[in-house]
Image 1 (cartoon, one colour):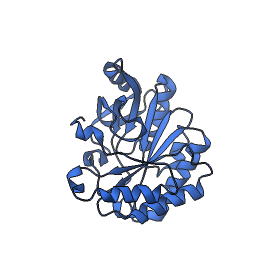
Image 2 (cartoon, rainbow, N blue to C red; image 1 turned 90 degrees about the horizontal axis):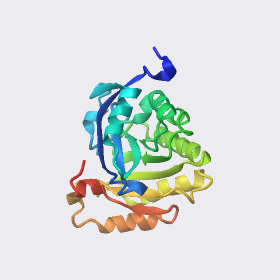
Image 3 (cartoon, rainbow, N blue to C red; image 1 turned 180 degrees about the horizontal axis):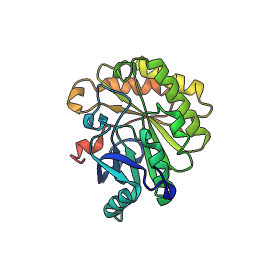
Image 4 (cartoon, one colour; image 1 turned 60 degrees about the horizontal axis):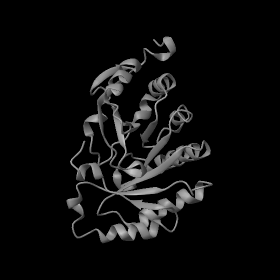
Length: 241
């Protein structure tokens, strides 16, 4: 039961740690990462498979979570990263947490839950929205997932939230596939001038030996529609968490 402004709501969290953001437009920023347990997708490239289990990790209430985060804040702290799993499975918990503690926040989401995103639009500062390709095998109905991701993007852009899309590509990914998705985003979002698309080569980068030319082709074709950045998982190159 919820009372005291939601302070008794609890969520399973698999880990809380401080590190350097290794992906996206906040690359290089010092963050406290809060990895929520449970995910509604099943991507074949997932690098945190344990976080798919909704009961993995420990159960936290919002006060205990804040205490753990506070211990990890350093002078170079920039933002909290709410990640997973899929953190929007815990949108009510996050809403209560941010309403009480009002910390600068990056939400990392797959964008499949637009109704849950609306609960947080006045509370988060940045959003990284992970676009899925059909080849990621995240769901059986990819078209439905894509429509939900587009709906989430529209909500975020209309609310003026600093948002970027991330798209993981594999050596087998076709440039035309990425280009068609970039074109669709441009066609359906009224203003994409502040919506970069981060193309992220899958890890480990050894998979890309002799194939990195494809990244240039993907960037060129997708760049006809959106502002493209190609950024690998830098934290893995630095051997950071």
